[in-house]
Image 1 (cartoon, rainbow, N blue to C red):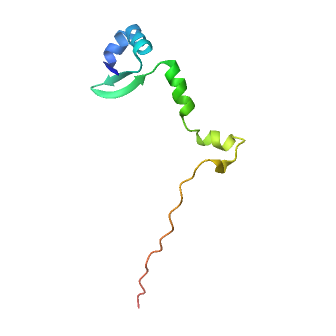
Image 2: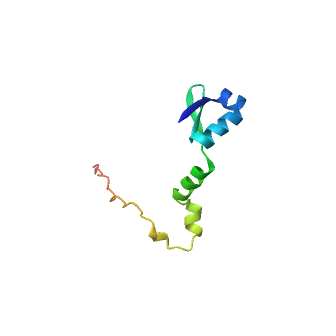
Image 3: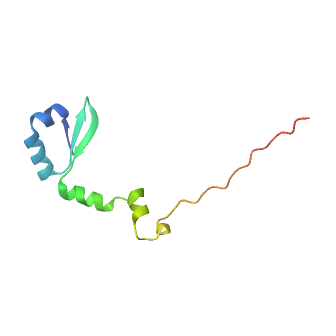
Length: 85
């Protein structure tokens, strides 16, 4: 994945976009730190299809809400109390 400083990505956006379409995802850095990634539309759609549903989607869905795995709860621990005389 090629990395582009934000100034270059802005100044050469057409080239940046063409690189994304032809070569795949392109990273944008801001002050040397990774800031964002531009991905081709086909890749974005693939990633969206693999994404887990949001809580809103789960609550509004017609599917049973227990169909999704829920992590087991750990047993509650009681505090030891001291008896003061």
